[in-house]
Length: 176
Length: 257
Image (spheres, chains in turn yellow, orange):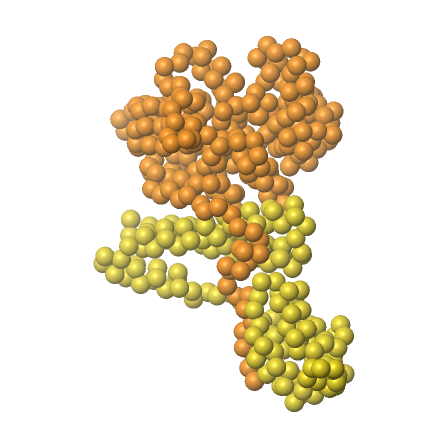
């Protein structure tokens, strides 16, 4: 995920100051996420340095001046380039579960069935939460950003569980 | 009926074995099953094909008899019932939902739903009234006069569910209920079953190979080689936002400088 491009995207809707950017990212763009303030300002500094945004200092009564950031033409081009290119697919293939199974199958006392059972329980617990939260989301008019993330969570967990079934079948053939 | 704590036991299986064939063709489909399901509980039975899950469902539904052990539904030991009593139990206490909807194509939705009551000798007006309520429950109250051929697969499965509920059974048995449905209508069907449990206190036992469907239950029972090898009670559900907060990957990563 590229915070840099997310910020360009938010600024494409209109100028914002740092605090507004952070709050729009956390509340509207990527629900339930956290973006620390230091990261927002460090990213904005780099975007300024690269000429992708510019800023204006706005004087405020009784308060310190605030910087309002806006997209430059170059920034708009960079945003277009990012949107127009395929993302690197996040497959998370060599995960912890895989590693545990590969270790367990090599050890004489390795309980790979136990590993599968534990990983499956964890995945089912989360899938139970995600499917029912997803069902509620339809009833409660939850923002689209949340329902789409829940869909992704459900489908990934489903895939993980199906893969665990295959592992069980294949490892069972290896060591009946 | 027996009670454990404050909860009534809807079904109780103890030491259940089921053997098919003899000597060289002998297969032990169930090899000692102990299982209690409380009233208002939603249990999913999973396991690879040949693990005994359909056999188990058939025994609970009184469609087949155990070789040994006891199967009790609503406190009644099925082995103590004669054929007529077993038929009555199936008709009045157990609802069945299968992968195939098994609807009568020449009958309308409400006629299909009312059919079990008509067969049971209940007057047509009373049967239709109850069938109308069952159709309301599955969200098809406004389409009583449509025939199965005029409805989508998901709607036909909902009629089948209404039919299974019309006698107000103590137990609903579902065998791969989303097997013929696409993922959207499958989800809708599972949500309907979940709502029946949450809002109507319906007890549901479902056989499925689908993880997403099983995850809608309160408990997952996993069979292998005719035995229960794993049981998992799933925790109560949080809000969508809480669920998302518990999933990783939403915090912004550091960009390269």
